[in-house]
Amino acid sequence: MKNTTLRRVLGTVAALGALTAGTLVTAAPASAANKDGSMDSDEFALFFQSANPSSWTDFAYDESLLSNDRFITPGPGKDQVVDNNAESYFNFDNVTWYVYTGAEAKGTEGWIPAKVSGNFSGNFVNQVSSIYDNDAN
Image (cartoon, rainbow, N blue to C red; front, side, top):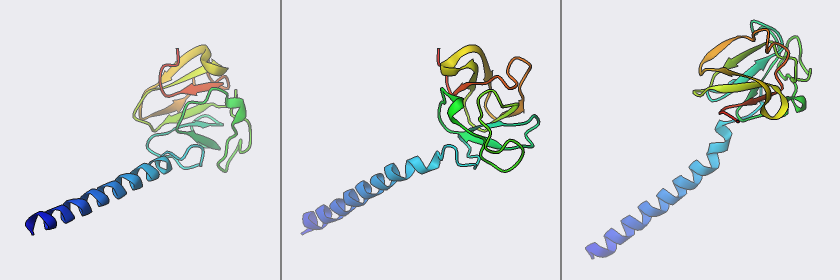
């Protein structure tokens, strides 16, 4: 009798564990909502103007062609193409992000450490065309 009860309890625990694991797998993508206008803790943002008082867009993943992206939040620059139009940044992620003056990690490389915001230097202001959350080269 004890073995039957034990098997039933273990079977229930295993079933609940599988159900929970399935729920976690399904829920994971929602935590990285790329380009939704909400700054999540694992994202990088580019701003239209310096000192961040303007429209921006957020990135959770590498972007090799910023010419396909637009600034999405309200403010100056909304709906403008991101490519060669960003003057400032905010790295809200826990990793370094790399910026390039050319598409697909070409051109001059710069890097922005985790949890740092600021204005792009003269080499990068209105020149960024691709971004990566790791060293693309």
